[in-house]
Length: 450
Image 1 (cartoon, rainbow, N blue to C red):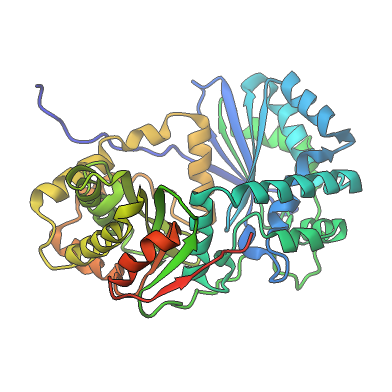
Image 2: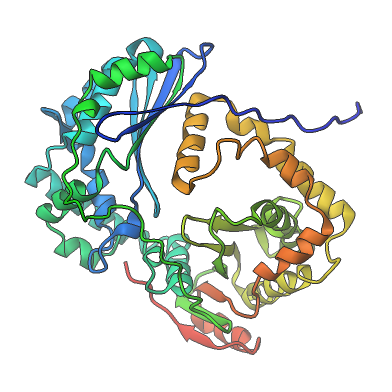
């Protein structure tokens, strides 16, 4: 075999940053070698900005944008985009809403004009609202039959409690049924403001060409509708530590042949200074195929097809989560082993030199593949904007992970709290309850709201 060289470095391209008179920021990365352009309007508001009594409102509002805008109905918008060889995506996360398009470079200005209309001139017609809301209600009914979604929703509620991160992006049936068109329109007027939005453009177009296209579009004439004291940004409330001791939440699925598991707790936000050490620790524990947990549950015990862990880091906070699906009669064994592995890796010197090297290689040697396309760079810029990260954040990833040492892993191991975590089990309660109770942890029945 040929010798393996050092991992390729990432060199994030320069970003031209301008601002319109209405406050809209415009960020451009020019790559003349690309015949395509990816663009996104990022609004720093997501489902965490839902009113307490209306979970799902921001997501439904975003879903309404392409149901008619700028004088075109939904079908006419779709036909116009297809005629330009473009595509549209609307993504709503807890922290941000991103409305993105992909375009052929020579049709960028026309495509941006459509994107501008969708963001700034949505119709919000009653018939469209009723149809979109009904579709979402039916989708929630479907999701109640998805054990992975049930487990995710129960876990989020257990970890975040009444914090805005604790509810699903789509909201609940009760909330959707009570939601009105006026509420959706008011939400759009309140949070879709040029002064807080960023237009990100990446591809075969220059900064000057972008600005020319922007000024010819509705984005240049976009006005804020909020009152001066309205704050559409995310409220930086840090969630309280809901769980002080471990608890097993059991969601009954009679006769289920498998149990869906989620194990974890509150975690740090994306801007934590320990980011690289935590990512490396996670790779050893459950973030790669050769991780400790996968070797334990899949290879040694043969009770799962795979198990993974992650630090899901968001703007105000995050979570550590382990998720897997195991055969029903091994539910308690899996829970015991997950908690045991989390405890073991916290010990000083627990991670061997070989484990550390393998984790670092898995994280760094393929890192450059995340920066191959215009849309990947667009997502990277949205991440930078969402979390207010430095522009050299991705340049630093490989050297920072490479520099992580055993002492760093020992220090950040305290971020794992196996003795104060939520254990969600979606499976046959009658079959698994006795063995779960034998673990010595409290077992409570749960039924997450949909």
